[in-house]
Picture 1 (cartoon, rainbow, N blue to C red):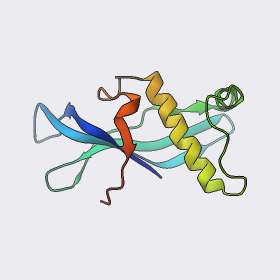
Picture 2: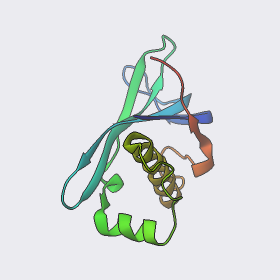
Picture 3: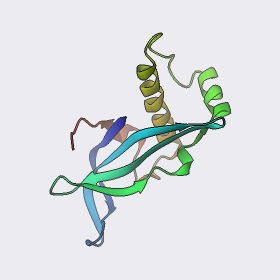
Picture 4: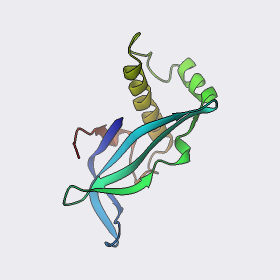
Length: 128
């Protein structure tokens, strides 16, 4: 599971019953990966914690996050990601690639996800 948060507050749409916007630390969680013969789809959502430390879901990770195997192979062959760190630990390798592909996706979508930039994100160690 990948949990990230922005280093600074971001302005996001307030969720009902509130109206307007709120300034919050934006968070994302990727808690599932679906793999099929065509590619990989990360599953998760953007959210923030309200004043009671309750999760307020903003949206699911969209279909843009889907990666075709051909694209993944191209990215790896062109060394756009680091070599896998472990020769024996599948979990570490999957988590490494998940983080790297998240960073690449953020670069492609700069400013589109609640105004975030690739450098806005850090590990979220908050336990809900």
